[in-house]
Amino acid sequence: SQAVPTLAPEAKTAYERMGARALITLPLRYGDKAIGMVAIAWPHPHAFEEADMSFYRLLMSQVGVAVQGQLLLQESQKRSEQLGRLTRIEASLSQANDEEEILRAITGQISLDSIKSIVLGYIDQEGDTNELMLQVMSLWHAGQFMSRAAVTLPSHRLVDYPISQLWLSKPDEMLVILDVENDPRAGDAIREDAKRDGWRSIVLLPLRSGGRWQGLLILTWDEPHILSPDERFIFLQLLEPLAATVASRRAFVAQLAARREMERLYEASRRLNEASDLQELLVTIVESLAIPDLSRANLWLFEHDAQKQVASTYLLSAWSNDPIVPPMAVGTKFVRGDGEFGDFILDADLLFIENMAHYE
Image (cartoon, helix red, strand yellow):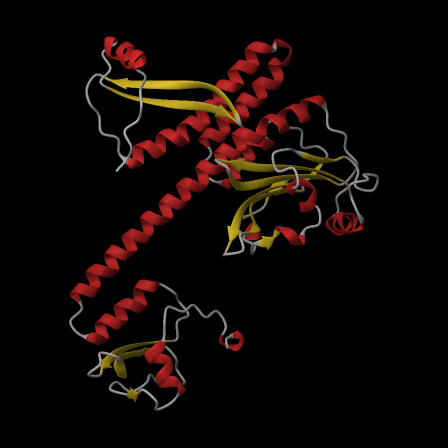
């Protein structure tokens, strides 16, 4: 159960005088800075669903960015054009439905004349080691957006990119290399990568939101490039709203994937319950996985001895999509101690073996 929030008596009295019976307070943050608070009240008690609370939190990250944008506009009229462009980018970001549209929100408001490429990638922590992996999600190159098929690349370890050492050491800052050939921070390994990939100048925007890595925006030029005041301002101001947009997009995609998974699970459960025999049940399992290159599946039943230990197993049903090797005969039985294969089945735990040749 959730802890009962504390509310100062004077604050409670003030809100009750205003007719409030339920209340939420939502801190507004811009980076690490608290910039304000939104209070929303109801005239009657109100139950808060977990989905609603999650939505409020995500919304406030966007609101904080928008409020800060307005404050900047008031503080500096001389930057009205810069802020106007930033506002247009943020508006486009808020309407983006996929990763390409996120990138288009940026490319529509900056000069692309000398830019070689712009890459939006997602960063994930993989496995027990929490190793950082980069997955390219959208790519603008040589004046056009590449197709989704062209950017569907495997994830890469960030540690394999020498330049990662520079921006990972300052993850909340934009990294700018105006000329890789003359920048003292760029060692031989970075220069070799730059030569191979064909760039001389690079800007990297690390994207963090909610204390977690979200992604990385990379802009490259094939000649040395000095950022204009407008470019520097826009890129710096993009760190927060772009990170918030990417975080919201990723949360939406994860929620959508979870919903689809639940729908698949529900349909599989329905078909399992309707199966008329064990063979149909096994076929349902195979079809529910929806993996086109499966070759075979077996359903085994364990038998226990007087000490309630697994002593033997026999094959209840078998399925094969292999035109050469037929399925194992139903009724095949293995008793513990008969051989390594039978003992493997009797002792098998949850396993995911990607390549049998590499398994010991």
